[in-house]
Image (cartoon, rainbow, N blue to C red; front, side, top):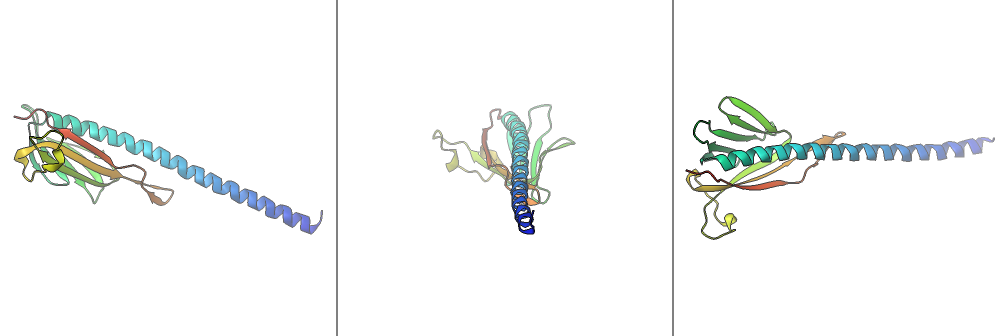
Length: 168
């Protein structure tokens, strides 16, 4: 075997190894993204389930901002407060002295409160500014994680509109 043949074989081997390495990195990123998406989706579904249950059982909205929602509870229960903290990227639920973090790595979250409207299916036209007229709560959030050193949006926007059913 000549020196030229060895150099050509080494070059071809290097190209094959580089292609295989690139494919492995791509597959690792894809697998991490899918795992993160499934994980974030599981937490989002859990948060929406808990929020839906509390909002539907609430007797009234005590107070709200775009990042905090306090719901009046039925007799015998404590009021429930949901707070989004942009600094820590978390959504917490507080009932009495119990504090539970529902969402981690949440990039943004907003609560929008709508009131009763006489026209069916037109909630978006009646945003309320005080808690007294609240009837429907709209939630929007997105979460993301870092995948192998890169910040990647690994979840689509989550949106829900939940109607209060148990008002006084």
